[in-house]
Amino acid sequence: MARYVFITGGVVSSLGKGLASAALGAVLQARGYKVRLRKLDPYLNVDPGTMSPTQHGEVFVTDDGAETDLDLGHYERFTGRAANKRDNITSGRIYSDLLAKERKGEFLGATVQVIPHVTDSIKQFVLDGNEEYDFVLVEIGGTVGDIEGLPFFEAIRQLGNELPRNHCAYLHLTLMPYIPSAGELKTKPTQHSVKELRSIGIAPDVLLVRCDRPIPEGEKKKLSLFCNVRESAVIQGLDVGSIYDAPMAYHNEGLDREILAALGITDAPEPDMSAWNEVTTRYHNPEGEVNIAIVGKYTGLKDAYKSLSEALTHGGIANKVKVNLQWIDSEVFERDDPAPYLEHVHGIMVPGGFGERGSAGKIEAARFARIKDVPYFGICFGMQMACIEAARNTAGIKNASSTEFGPTKEPVVGMMTEWVKGNAKESRDDKGDLGGTLRLGAYPAQLTRGSRVADIYGSTRISERHRHRYEVNMDYRKRLEANGLLFSGVSPDGTLPEIVERTDHPWFIGVQFHPELKSKPFEPHPLFTSFIAAAMDQSRLV
Ligand code: GLN
Image 1: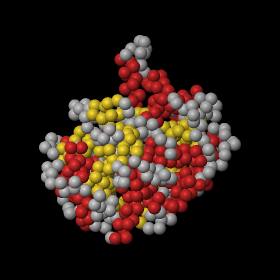
Image 2: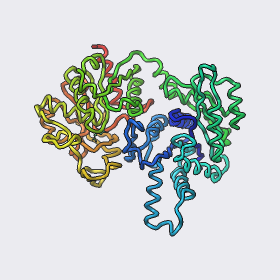
Image 3: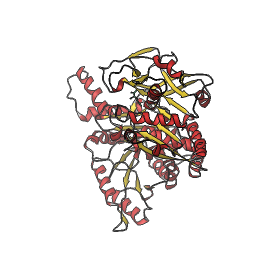
Image 4: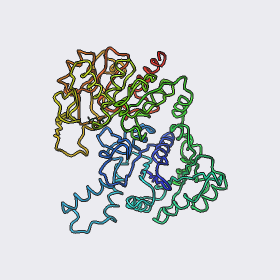
């Protein structure tokens, strides 16, 4: 039977709870265990799909088409296990399923309540489908004390009693802030946070204490005493140089050892950390560097492009170079000439995006890359904007636009109304719901033999994850191809363009899908490896 580790956070958010969970998962996996990571999100949205990336960060899409929390991206990158729609749930989803049942009369006259009905649904979700795993790590979003998180904390408290002995452990992540005027790391916020947790019936087994400098022994003792956690289980979580240092760093501090001890496991095999050593050695010993401009509109919050910046880093790891990211708000190019911003970069990335704002600047970035022969990588919206740019400036279709921006006579990018999913047909119109109705998840694509992308993938059949409502219009294919923009990847039925590439350019590729979602530090995505290699070539010219 699977063992459960519940991971909660206190003091402040953004302590890297998702990363810590992923790192713990990675080390347990390195010890030979089968590990699953899951996330419980207390907010009321049914999923994060409709939330602005500038508020909540990137939406991570799974193969089976779920729009999930970005922490699932960390889980995948650290363990290599593909996440699925059963790995993330929100209060919104729990309530909407529960209320649908209530409307059908399935509660047979009972009063539907937070305890037991909501908590039972949470527990059912947590326990479901874990047969093949040794460890299930369950992260609870938010911090202890949040009102909306209470049913989740209550549910995991109950599970502590219901699971067999030695099958449940609680890991609590906190912060020790350094107060410069006192010259000390302070324990009080952690004490308060644990007190809060204990007041709702959860006693943490292990504390992972984030800090920017080593915790003196005396302070560790104090935390142990006041928080009622064994001294050896007060784990120092020092800031690390790269997130990929975390598995080794936490292992060296004894995090996995203490979790195993809390679960009564004394005979665990030692972890084989060789893959992680290889990744971090390559990361910390680059033989060169490249500058990549990311021209987007959510640049104010780096989490909005989490998988993307990680995938670029992976491309650097593969090529043994440091990748410097220059974040540029695309709206800048609606006022300023892009040249001073882009002249010295070695590659230009235009990532996914929604809505008209900022699109003109992205089109400018694609134009600059095309005429100056700078490597260009357009993802989803970045591909669509590259096609509009090519239509306007190479194929003479002056009014080329996207129907996403309003009615247009030249819909080079248009809304998809029908597509094939497996053996079924999906259809949409512009009056439908916004949530959960995009073309989501893994779809296959057929690549043109002899194309650059077929060479990069080493295959003509691929599968990648999607998240879009609009699509480049096949009616314009001939005119765009006649001007050097080859449609080198299409859906198997030939109706949807998946990849475009310029045949007259050193490296210019647009993809309708999100390859960044599948890249891993120990298995960098071939498109990112190739893009960074092209940027290295460019760096020798600039
Ligand atoms: N807004 C575009 C669409 O819906 C692109 C989406 C994206 O970049 N993920 O098709």
